[in-house]
Image 1 (tube, rainbow, N blue to C red):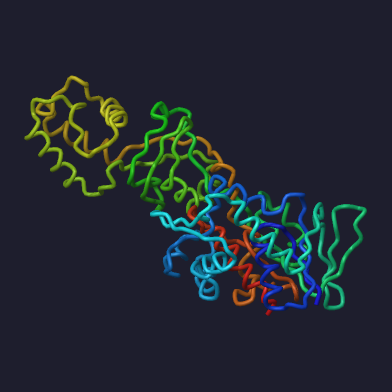
Image 2 (cartoon, rainbow, N blue to C red):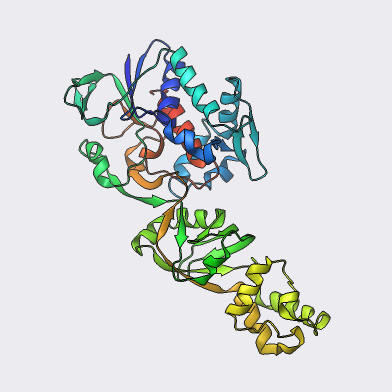
Length: 404
């Protein structure tokens, strides 16, 4: 059996290895459009490679996928996060789990993962051909013919083909698969930070707050977790998760919207007000900047006081009922204007791709083109940060490689 893998990324290599595990006698060739296989693996996690997520609950892990949650929940029953860790550690790549449940190689170097995958592929006779971008696929006599973008490469025919070419920034990049009859869900960016060029809070660059509750007025979008103030706006896990779950909404607004911040992650206004009343009773003669009742960073505390119109010389006992309510509102219902986005580091993630309606979740085979399979981000599946996108690559690649 001759098998072609389109794409030399995480999903491509893992599906190739799965093919050899399930079909040892198969001839497997990976076609990579660049000269640099596993490029995204190398830069992941700041060069450390966030291999997977350490949570063992399939239901919990599945919640990390804004698109494809039900699809991934079924797939994870076949190959889950524990299976991923076991696989790499059995190949002499020890892993460790951080407190935030992200999993990294003990070496703290993504090359450990890259070397493992390349070494496993070489030992099993898997060939990777570079500079081999695919122009189109043509079904012929129950086989699939690959046509290359390079004019000097003749068409090649295979029994099975697994497409693991990664996400495309535009629908145009998926035209070759649409021509086979697949429905394309328009790709849009996911996992990005918020640009706030008109907000003075950016002067607090480097200030981190954990946890906060961020939400988008007029929608059900809200997330809690750490927030980082940068020189361009807001970043951190809470913002990245919000950007992932709201990817299509933000795209439709052309990345111009308001974000509401509850700096205390406390939603009961009366409770916050009572805490402030308690501070007033205990520190009536002290100035507002000198007492930080909720442990907020000093620079942020002073900024919020100024934003609320409170003088630095004002004493707690001088606030009165109106002042206390106003301060509670600033702390729990703060609002900022967002105008634009910035990609998160070097990690490019899209939502969109091949519609899951066209893919058999049990085998990853196309429902519209026999002997064609999919793995990884080419499908309309994407995860939040924390190892979820790589886990989708390992899981779908493993299942696709069974060629069932």
